[in-house]
Structures are given as C-alpha cells and as structure tokens.
Length: 333
Image (cartoon, rainbow, N blue to C red; front, top):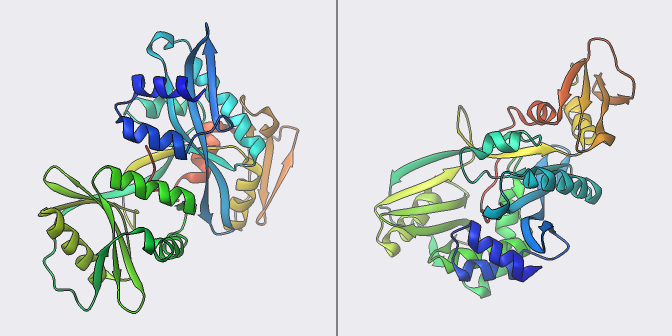
C-alpha cells in the first residue's frame, strides 16, 4: 500500500521527496489509509488523521482528511465522492464527532460541499513590518531537542486556551517541527523565569512567514518577531491568526458525523431555543431522524414532525459551525 500511495502522491502533489518520506513515515499507516483500487492500480486514496478540538464541553474527537487525491487516469468517475462516503462511515465507527479538511484549490470548496462539508474554520491574515525592539529582559533561542518538553508543555497549555481550536498531539507536534526544519524554518522560544512564547517561523522569499505564534503578551510577540526577522534577514512578516472579531478568510471545512452529540451541545449552548430539525444523511443513514431542541436538551424522534426544518448533512454542518470562528494551524496540508 505505502509504495503505491507514495507514487500516487508524487503524481498529484508537488512535494519534495524529503517531505513525502516524512509524511509517510510519521503520519500514514495501512489502518488510517482509505483507498480505491481499479484494474490493479491505486486509483484514489486519502488518510484519516485523528485530532481533537476544544469545545465548551471539553475536547471532542475529530478526524482530518489528508492527502485526498485521484490518479489522473481515473478522474471524473465519482471515485473520490465514493471514497469520502466510505471514509465518513469509518470515522463515525471510530467515534469522531466531525470530519474536517482544507480544500487545496478554490473549486474544491463547492466539490466538498456536495459531501456534506461546510465552511467552518477561519483565519486572519496580515503582513507587517518586522519589529525592531530590544530584548525586554527576554532570552530568545532556537529550538533544540533538549528543549522538547518545555516547548510541548507551553504549546499544549496555550492551544487549549483557544476556543474551538484543533489540538495537536505531542507526536504530531514533533512531526510539525520536523517538517518546519526540513523547509528551512524553526521554532523560536522566548523565556524569562519560564517560557513566555513560541514562534513557528519559515523564511520565504522576502518575508518571514509565521505559521503559529503563542505568546503571553505583545512585548514577547515583538521580541520573537524581531529576533527571527534579524536572523533570517527579513524586513516583512506574514502571519495568520485566529479570527478575534469581524470577518476573516475561510481556511477549512467540517462535516458533521455525530449530529446527536453536537446538537446536544448546541441545545445546551442555546437554552432558550425551541426547534426541530429533520435530518437526512445519505452517507450515514443511522443519523437520519428528527432532532428536537427544547429547554437546553436535544431528543431524537424517528417520525417526521410538522414544521421541522429539513436539513441534509451540509445544512447540519452549517448550522452547527456557523459563527464559531473555529481555527486550526500547523496542519500538514
């Protein structure tokens, strides 16, 4: 499986051999790979990578669709739609509440919507001049293996403070750092008595690209940016951040797999809401039914109710993720 999958990846994506080795060494197994074979050839494949996301009820399980691709000889036959449906059934069986992905090209937003996905993840993009500040009593250094526990602890505690944010396991964080260093970037650490900030930085052309920034305050942010900018010789910083207020740019999509669990959270989060939703899910028919929300509680009826709002899988995904400004970063997309 791996050899055929690597060959398909090389055909469909423009990644380096070094990245492909890293990805298949660290992220893929036969168990998390979904595939369709035709005429003895791997026609389409994707990986299901386990993640979790912070919700007010705690962290909930999710599954990331990675590396979805179809061999050029087998395109326009509906294979990926069929593979996604199979994948959603596997994810449901594995306990994931929702699936999520990052469309690689603009036209794919509409394509994935046909499989029940809705825009769910957002980001704010900005470009600023690299700050020129003093150290403010901070020690700034680059990551080394001896700093792993320090970085992992600060990273986890900082990410868990973000609402509706995809969380990385320690193993996945290690892979992210390896990929960053493979591309010529690194993690920068700010500390006084304790860790005050982390900067994931990658020099690209004439800018310093910041893929994640976790800091205790603005002073730490400016010191990290100044140190990394000076080291890489970049005067401009391009970074993405979670959407704090107002509009952002769409980043990714989500597809509800376990509507009862999510609607129960939704009901609790909207205690004054009284509503009924008649859900039809072709890929997951066990989810079809009428979901009744009243007094902060969700119940399920298997009979249709007059006046219930009809939803397909995409409509359910839009209902539950609309307005959350969910966020993810450091994905191997």
